[in-house]
Length: 310
Image (tube, rainbow, N blue to C red; front, side, top):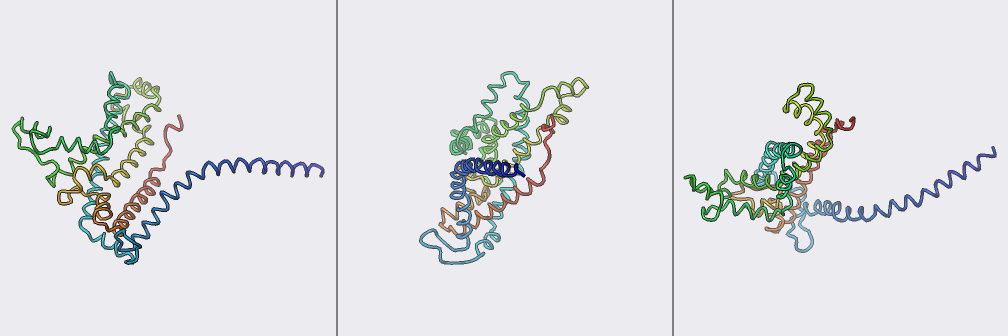
């Protein structure tokens, strides 16, 4: 009975000593939390509010239309085209860009002589801004053979100059080539980081057991890169949905909306035509698409990483 007061004093002292620690945690988290609420959460709710109005951005929003903007968007063929283009960019990215990045990562990761130089060369495009990349590829795609490198090469081999950015059948592919050149180095760097975490002993043991390079890659390297690949796919899809700068500078969504994306569609109505209520509704659609994909993807890819058991 005489030890109870001592025990209660010990609990009280623990509570008192933990209070300064909690206060320090709150003080360190407060700036980041305030910035997050101010620049992320608040704009989302403001966009939801403005999307319910027919508002041009000047003066208060008073012309309430409810969900009229959302209904109009779904009936607009240009929006459907932009949505389809976004899907095509995602398909191209997952089918071409990421496999290319993975192949180069495996090639320059371990066996290629002078791999340090190649890593720098391949990663260099990602360091450049999207504006610079867009201007560079616009010069390469110039329809004048005397100015555009690609058409100069075409003329040398006896072919006709190609309107890379003026042909509705080629423009999306042309833009995607520029996107691939810009971003594959980033994904290659992700795969290189993943390869560094794979023990070489596993591959050497497989070679001793008779596995060739292809078997080594598909049965050892690829499964152990599962976590890195899932991250790369996630970032690639979200980036494809939100792609704007490079497309807008190169084509402005043209010709005839052939390269329109959700972001350029939103910008066109929000900041070119000053239909900010309509543009806000498009932004909410983009936010919902990204949110739904994130939730579903995280749920489907919630798998244990093989490397955690090594």
